[in-house]
Structure formats: structure tokens, C-alpha cells
Image 1 (spheres, chains in turn blue, red):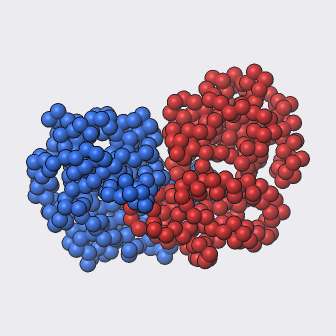
Image 2 (cartoon, chains in turn brown, blue):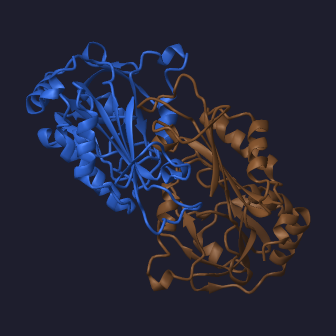
Image 3 (cartoon, chains in turn brown, orange):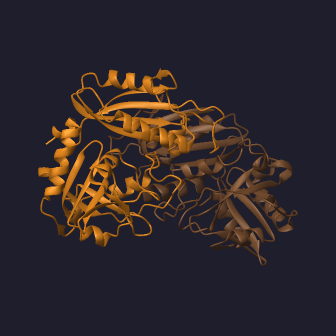
Length: 276
Length: 276
């Protein structure tokens, strides 16, 4: 990983010990797919970041400055992921907002995650529930212990779960929210649906593209509705559309509407064509 | 603030850019009251930290090493607060636990907060709700955006809230949980009660002392029960027992049972006698 750290305008060598990102997860992040040194979905990511910053009353660095630094970091990156964290910066002990807020921001470049096996993702249900918190719903904030706990449920030595690529999470009301690091769409009675994210979950950048493309409905969905769907897929802004082959015992054959959507995404945003 | 930062056994100059504490709030913290260079409640704080680490599957540094470093940092501190943060340390992009976990830990020394005015705390109700998450309830973890948002509700220029010292929080089921940074006790029909912390809230070290001392009951409490209580007080491990004089429009006269409890705490743990 190569990273650059800034406090306000100033590049620094390291994160301060009293950074509120570390103390309270008091920050936001974005993960952008990089293609030939550029982040084609930059504007959508920055818009989401700005909405989150407004809700958390967090100052953002100047966009042009961040973008210049990202360009420098990505100069020789052909394909990868760019992560941007913006925290509220240094602050005294205690939850009260500091009287002045100079954000800390970190840019880091990462390799792309391995492709889904043969283009098809294997899912499991997570036991960890997402709590219902409308004040934070939709934001890509840095309070992510629920996702950490959910993701830790597999990749253990437990043989039964060894072959899961991702896990689906329910909220504490037993409504489906999405995967630990991706949004979920399901074809139910001929219509594409996706969980509402007004009480928890993340307003994914790729989700927004798919919502508009499929004219999908945002609804509450039960686990049973997902398991009985005609097709399901995941999406996120780094991996694009991920067809799902299996969820626990339930298996799906490849669905032509999902393949068609992948093709449309690849046509609209060519970087998503190159990672097979 | 003076601080010392460590990665595992090694003292370092700064936090790494890929620390999971910063990325996800993936860590725990403790805030201990310091008296004449010592932290008299060390054992209770370390026990809570160890319970949290077990639930989050987070490695802790060796206790003796942390305690030695704390002693060095506090050598000339007569009265203050010691903060310890333990994060899961460096990790790659993504929620999956790193295959090896070398914790990052930070010790910092802080002045004591100002005494409550004339020994009596003014409270308000917060609008921000605490979400219900049994998997994290009780832990002093670093996912604290809810507290940050709640604490930001006052200290604004808003004149109506200007005179609040602390805010009480309800959960999303409208049960009272406690203050943003303290636990709450209420005398209801002659019996001391405190909110259960099985769904959210923090298992405070001072709360444990009070629970045992008062043989208090752990129950679900409504806002109305708090407002109609004979007396209420807050407690935390830095400030001890904080009698409450007012909550919004509701005022309480000093209550002899609260004064008596403060005296007992000061007798049991002398550092709590010195901050008036």
C-alpha cells in the first residue's frame, strides 16, 4: 500500500495520536475503482462524501487539492482501488466537537480484489445484525464494527462456511440490508428490488447507477424473499456487478438480465469490462 | 496532551495510515482517573478491556507492559485522566480480520474536566437515539458517532440549551440508556435503578461500583420514569458521582442519599474526594 496523509492543506508523515478518526471512528471514507490512473466515478463518490460530511458536520478538504494528490498517487496505476478517508482530525478528550475542525485525510492505493470465481459469487447469511440508526443510515462512515464482526463469521476454519465470498446481513428487525461490503438487488415477481437504506446500510455509488438503470424499487425485503427471488446480484463501486450463484443451499443459474446489466455497465463505464 | 504510541511491544512515533482503528473504529478504549501518579481503578478498567477484546477477538498488549508505560507517563501527574486506546492495528483494505493482529495502543494523559458547577449537573434530553446492538452493548468500543452527534446537539449557539452539562440518550425503542459519557441512576419509588446495558450503552466502571454499593436494579426505564424520579445522578470513572440538579424543566433538590453515596465513594477511593 502506498499512502499520503494530510492535515488540512499540509502533507504530514503520520496520523496524530489524538485523531478523532482513531478515537471514535469520527470520519467518512470512499473506495474508488481506478482505471489507467483515473477514478472515473470520482464525482459520484465526492457527492456522497459531501452529503455525509454535511450530516456529520465535518469539514472536507478542498476537492481540487484531493483530486490533484490522488492523480499523483495513481500516476502509474493501471487498475486498482483508491481509498480516501477523511476524519474530523485532532481533538481533545471527549465527544464534543472541536471548536475548529481541520480534517485529516488519507489517500491510499490498493490492488483490485481477486475476481469472483468464474464470475459467480457464493453467499452466506451472517448472524451479526445491523442496528437501526437513521441518523447514520446511507453514510459511508468509519463506525464499522458491525461489518468487522459479520465478516469475521467466515474465513474461520469452519468448513461449512469456507466457500463463502460474501455475507448478507439483516437488520435487528430482520429486514435484509445487503452484503458486508456491497449492495444487493433481487428480481422478485419480475421486478428488480433493493433494500431501502433509510435505517441502516450504505448508499452505494454503484447501487445508484443500478437503481436508475433498472428502475428498481427500494423496499423492505425479508430473507425469504431473497431466497425465493428469480435472481440476485451484488454490486459495489470497485467490483461492479457480481452475479450470485448460491446463497447457502439456494442456487441460481446465470440470469440473462444480470448478464445484460453487466454488459451495459461495461459499455457505460469501460473499467468494469476489464476485470474478468 | 502527552502521548505514547506503541505497536505490539515496540514504541513508535505515530499511527500508521492503515490502522484499523482509524479505518473502522476497530478498537476499544478506557479512560482512567489518575491520582498521585497512579490509576487506582486500573484492575477494573483492564478487566472491562479484556472482556471487550474477547468479544471483538482483538489481541491486547501485555498488561504489565502497558502499566509500566502508564506509570512512566503519569510520574508527575497529581490529578488527571489517562486514556488508553487499543486498536486492532494495521490491516489491508476490507473488513476481514488480518491474519495476524499486532495491536496499536496509545496512552495519553489529560487534565481533569472542570468540576460540575456547584456540585450539580444540568441535563438535557438528546434527540439522537442510540441504536440497539447486543453484539456491541456494554463495550467501550471506538464506534462513537452516535455520542458525537448527541454531544453536538448543545454547545451550539442555541440559547435554550446553553446551560446543559450533559445530555441523556434514549435508544431507538425510547428506553433511557444514560448520558453521552456517563451512566445514570434514578431513585424510583424508594429503590435505586439504572438502565440495563444489554442492548446498548457502556458497562461503566463507576456504574459497577455503584450497582454493588446501592444494590440497584438493572431495568428498562422510560423518560417519564426518570423525570418523575425522587433523585437522579450520573457517574463515571473520571468524575465519580455527579448529582443532577435539573433535567430540562424538572428540578431536584440535593438528595441525602446521593450525598451519602458520594461520601462513601470518597471514603472507598480517596481520589474522588479531591475534585470539588
